[in-house]
Length: 303
Image (cartoon, rainbow, N blue to C red; front, side, top):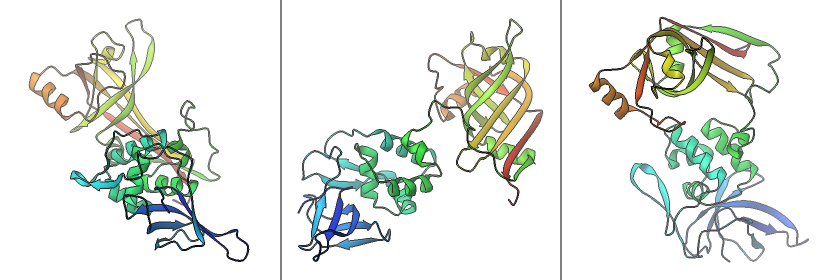
């Protein structure tokens, strides 16, 4: 008997020959795929060490497997991350989204696997190889990463947010300036509202950073967002939780200025968390000093 991570272990009833119990193999103890296995049972969600008997068989999942039955299990390297060897990684879409969400939240594989109640080896497999995890596995991962199953599957990528149903008893609450600063927190994607040289209003999404009390972003001198320099602008950030029909928004209003000090520019470039998603040469840094900071949050009335 040989198995791979993600395969299903089925124990048959001796009386009927049908499935009596089944579970997902989430841990291997031998690099050739032979028993024993760590199995997460579908009926209890518990993980146990199993030495399969004559009434058990393996149901192989239909996805690409690591090359060769003798592939070693993932090993834990520096910073608590696991990797499989040998051979290059070829993650599927779900694995890429899981890895991105995990890194975005600053979690190691071991931490994420613990939250999702699965083997770190299996999580490494999901992130590094094309896989088709069960719905139960996706639900646990989504919960561990603070996201949704639909997001991990890539559903609704091209749809605008906020198409879910409104709460039965919503509560709209104003946020304090301190709460607004916390939500702006360090970096992300926000929108700058500017007036173009032609006198038309424009709202442009930008990758931003928070440095002290300022909001900074980089752009190109000939771009629309460069028109924000030396004017008063509005900058908005928000988050929508589709599953729970709640969310928040923060609005900052204040003067925008070009950062001209070479040392300040160097520090901003070195400390930047992300490169501009739009790409290209964007070395002009613009700083917004909020003179007004307001925000609102929608929650159920009992929160």
